[in-house]
Length: 503
Ligand code: XMP
Image 1 (cartoon, rainbow, N blue to C red):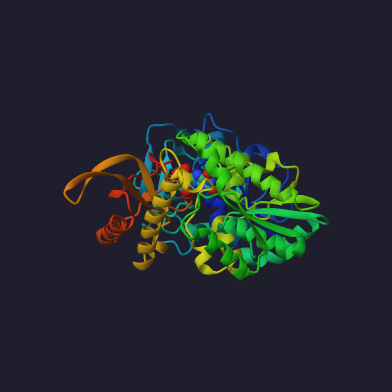
Image 2 (tube, rainbow, N blue to C red):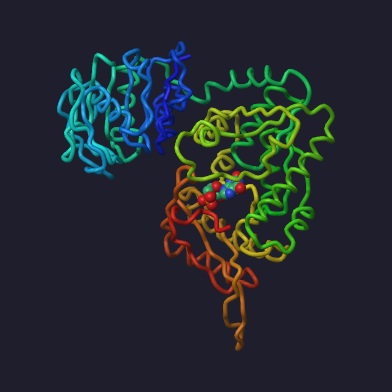
């Protein structure tokens, strides 16, 4: 099968490069520079070298054995590294460029077929190329730099100092497609949904006998992983849905109904009491997470062990998790705390059918497998559930209050057509009381914060520009219908510096 390798030197955009290549129909995988095999494997017709957090003089070397063997696109750091190490020159730190720039195409190169002169490209670099290696020639500049892009035919290399993978680069997908099809000669039009049959066959081979369990969360990833496994091994598949008591209003029913509708066999495990007991009196957020994780493993393990001959654990791990947890070169920006840590603790072989897919690709697999659109478009919901949205102690009463307030917000977003226009939205119950009036008296009530964000992957986020009317309507509903709440506020913080959840 045709495959593109994206070699990671620690750029924050490496995942995006692979995603963009796949979006134009070329299957791409990421390899950290230090794991690159000495020879390209069959099917690999091209390579993209990523940017890096490092500077050209200090960063890791490009694999010289690969240069000139097959077409390569070197982005930012990699383009500079080549210039610096093959007789050109780079100055460091003096002409930092960040943000949009105007692309001035100076040579008609196939890279720019269909790309408009003067279009925007995205810059993010501190070093700048000041001279090219002998044999390389510039093909584009910007107002600030002379070598925005260059070609070095003898090395089959194109270097760009801008980032074609970032959505702010107007013709980024076009340039990537030009590189992949015109230089590398990729012809396939890879689509995630065409891989379902092969995935199912692989799963069947990976689980030849015995039973498999899967912890379903109601989220897209676990649902799609489960469906694939069910298709592969039928009755030997056992889905388990744990009601932690930390779910949103009506969530358990909605999720189970959706599973029934798509024909996935799922057993409900009611464990609210165990979770609430473990959380009693606990206010420290990390301690809450620890305890929830612990109870989850206990409950899940007990249920799994009650099924005879379980040998496999199916998980909906997706590509960004895989890259972040193992292959990534960059210093870790965020450590994710998924509930449970199931794999290390359980004596089952781990099966991860989605480990090479991006979220949007998982959605496409889901569509093809018949998962209803409403289910695929659900906002992400954290494993520890409402416990991270109740600041302070989690009690049955505070859970009830938050559930009702959250439901009013979500329902208003649906009614006003905003649900699908935000990436994630929810209510948070704050641990303060605030003064209000009830009749002629001062009465102390609680505060709810509303959070609605725009994001693509949860790594960064912006507050969603919800219209004033939507916020007002939500507030009125909450104040009128949820006892104990006297104040509602809207969170306008971006991530960073804030996070999405309040914890
Ligand atoms: P933060 O709060 O870190 O959240 O900005 C980023 C995204 O991750 C979700 N989140 C979680 N998801 N288990 C999950 O599956 C968790 O423990 C967890 N904590 C946060 C959060 O809802 C947001 O979408």
